[in-house]
Length: 312
Image (cartoon, rainbow, N blue to C red; front, side, top):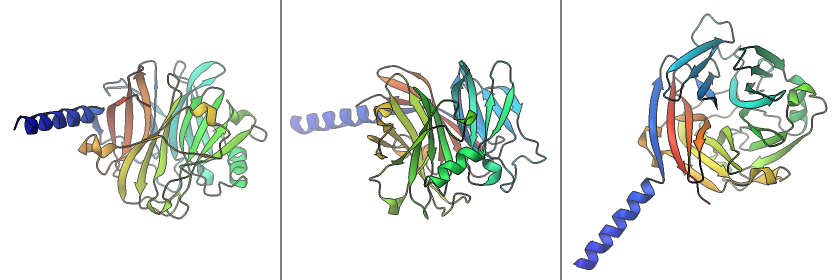
């Protein structure tokens, strides 16, 4: 009997420790802010943009609204799909040595070939057409271009293009800082993301975040029943993938995640949530605190705060 009780105790203790490996620490619904797609963190502030929203939302880390910045004219809450700029990703990047918010369009249509630079101090906004750069990417093999992820890494910018069920491949695009300034000549290198993944159960990349502390790339990925870069489909499951030592892999033809985290196993509130992006708000050698944004496909957004255990 004592042996049975001891085994039960050890098993229970192990299960409890495993459950605490990653934990959800915050959950916030934003029913009035549409289609959260890109999120970035800088100077104790979160910057949130929806792919069919007309304005940028700025909050504190408790998700209290601090400011809103108008970007696009719209008479409706959600900009119609046919004309929206489709700003799918956001990140803090260095522009002339000044930390600035960059948001980028998906490139899945002519109206979506843009990026925007926002100065958090002066609140100056700059819109830049990316037709030349995006056309080079398409000619290089990314015919179904669909930029969903953006992050700054040492010495450059990293983008992610999401596939779909008709074209079940994701790609990472390594390019230079300020690539938008010399689009005809700026170098880039394309790597197949998840080269060993099962394409019959396709999981698409939806967001990127780089950890300068650990040189890890964090990616949000999700399943969605869609066969094109323009269409939406039934939401499935969402994951966090982690790639170690990403800066040493800039010239790899294929890159695979070392860790895959099924978010539903952490908390059931991730069920049927299409996680679009994430950002790191604090980290040390043991844990990273991240914020994730979900598009509920109903005109609202959901924010999650998560503690991720750092491990190899």
